[in-house]
Length: 479
Image (tube, rainbow, N blue to C red; front, side, top):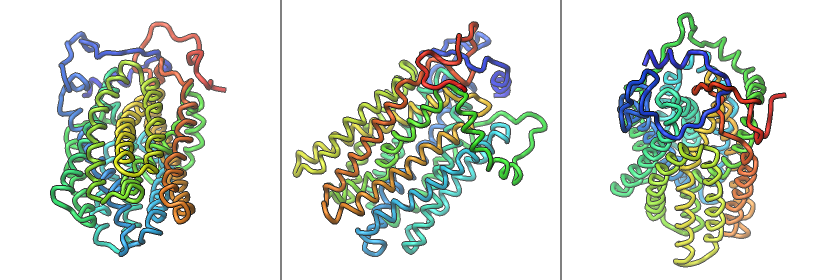
């Protein structure tokens, strides 16, 4: 691991072109690379990518069991906020937690950069901050539970900043798509696991919170045991309060720095729009299934569980496609499939009987597949565009735009239902779902010209530098 750290720190061209479609048979020293999982990581040890990917398994348990399933259903119970106010209270909690995280994301990323690129201590802190409040939500009064969920979801979103950026530590440049796809696929296995557990044990909604918290903690352990980060350079100080205060002024600098990287500003703006659809669908899955389709929570859980299986299989395919076609082209294919899924899903809510249910399942399968594809492709594209010395900082900005869009999307979804549901009934859900199509198409249009045929990370050296900082199709150049 130490030799890999020295290799990563050597000077390389800042804007190096890269087009690697397969894992090389040998490393830089001419030693044959191991096959399988071991060949995906610089350490040559299979337990490293496996332990890393198990964290995807762990945090997806929280994402599905709490965000997509239990919290919304718990809030609409008559003993909590009720059917009229529950969905809006849920939307507000999501907006507050994600909005606060969006504000501090660049600060959190910059702090890890100031710590010599160490991500794991921060990842551990926010993992625990998510697990502990989640465990007691089900036994709390409605308002207290809402506050605890807000804290837990803030921590969950913060942990993702550090988890995503550790992909660089555990993978090679040419294997990131594959390993990212494996992580997402194993993550959806977490969805399947907790969904089956809820069904087989017939867990009541309040009990889901403790079970999800315990399992999140259990399956997060391997990452912290097997993944080792390079030690910071001698003399690198531990970040403290002064660094946190200094980082508060980092956002403007981060945005200015991002504008100097060709294609990155346009990608981030595009991500703001397509993430609106992605993040909102994750949150409202169970509510749409129960309130718009009239399904029971148990049936909704089984349907979402089945769709998660589709997402698992698709994630492996999307990961391979990223390494073959590149992250941008793969992302465009994913967003095209989402356009189809949102249209079919919106229409299905107004079609009665088995035909409407079949259309709903078809739309869910398309959206579930695409959900894995977005997660696989866009974090690899972000890494492709980011210089290594600013990886944490730019991943904070990446988190900011995605989470900022979730605030807008979730509030828009909640307001549409609050205003139109008493008047239009199920049609209000159709309007809310189809509103996501508009923002998703805007995002796809924005990222279409962005090129991923070069690497801002400088991890693959080239003999001849490009004539300009970006290919002719790049939408933005430094000013």
